[in-house]
Image (cartoon, rainbow, N blue to C red; front, top):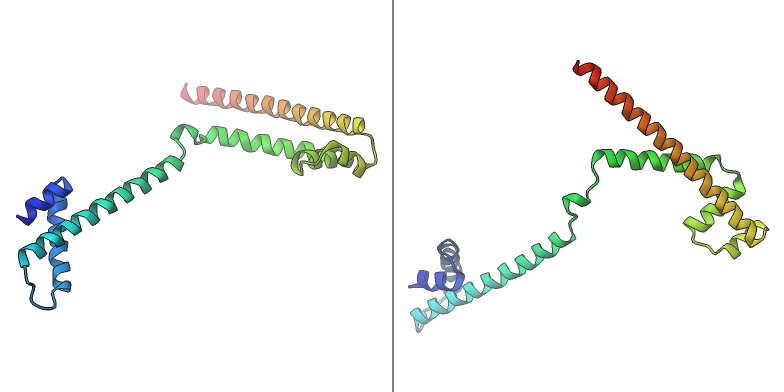
Length: 170
């Protein structure tokens, strides 16, 4: 009768059998003296145990669902080629900044990284706002040129790799 109660409350026989086993372990710990109504006591322990298991299962499901929502989809993960290209582009940007005149690099860092307004940058460098705008335009142009050159180098490397692969295949 206890197994039927647990199956009805938990929805399947496997969980009910596990709960019944847990119930006997719990009763062994609870029973210190004689029980006035043993059948009612057993049914109450079984019902409480089933309720505890349902609550725990609901919490576990909500926790797991919340965790899954925070995980990126496989489509969001970068593939190795995209990772390689991103690293190559980052290195190209760092090289371009490294080759810039000091004032140009300083203006770019203050504007893009420190998010300072152009007026503040102009005051720091002792130039006009128009001068800051021109420095930033030239800095962006240097970065774009470096990235274009980097893209051309990557395309050339891919072409050579394809040619080597075709030579190996033949």
